[in-house]
View (cartoon, one colour):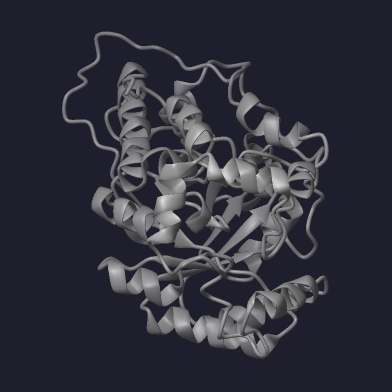
Length: 385
């Protein structure tokens, strides 16, 4: 195997090893994919100030996110169908995150269940919640997360309706998946992936199957998911969930300064600047372009994190310099998982941490908590929209 030196190496390897319909699910956006591409591209114009003759010893990436100590300001974002990138994928990613010392977030639409993650890890993890029409199911999901000792609840606000994702439609990737003949042939060409799937019983949505009313098989699951995402979601629902949960609440999917102000006013612990990886509104701002205005709008009233386009340590450093208190990675860890399983997720985290550490030092800083706009070249920073 070639030496893995960057997340791009992991992406190329994952593309070889993961069936096309599931690889495309992770590595795609909606409509023309312009926002999906902008998430990564818009980091590039932001330039770093290199400093010299500065003592670079004693460097530290340690900080906190939502009051939790972290080895670096990075958390694993919630991603649906993670267990289809690699057998038992959510468990493997959670174990890698725990060993590294960063938070792991489990998606409502995960293959492995809340209880699966709790049984295979010792560190508290976060649970991401989608609001469904079946409020009784949502209450029970929240109760299950509490019983599993999840340390924070992440509420995703930007999936009331689903954006049109052309690759998923062409591949027959629905909920549950309905593979085309071409997709089935492609799966058969991935023996490593197939063997992993044959060795696990976790092949459906573990948080839903057997827990939602009337959902006992794949057919009933399809009918249930088709009607459950709730387009009526409002800030009143956010307040209801906050009270029901009673612990740290993170609001994900904020792109507008006005919405950021509402998030801060509702008493949430943190908000995540995110456009759902460019998978919802194509043509929306990239996350890094939206970040400065949101930081300006909320000040220190709420922690601001950034999700979207991060594949390097320099991306993390630039987000922190622009005021983010933390960042989240989705596709980057999925590439590692698809490429090499748990070891691939660990490799992804090691690559990002090393580049973050070295780049911070070259900018004349030795503690991530001291990083600010002073490390950026004036005139290369995105303006506040």
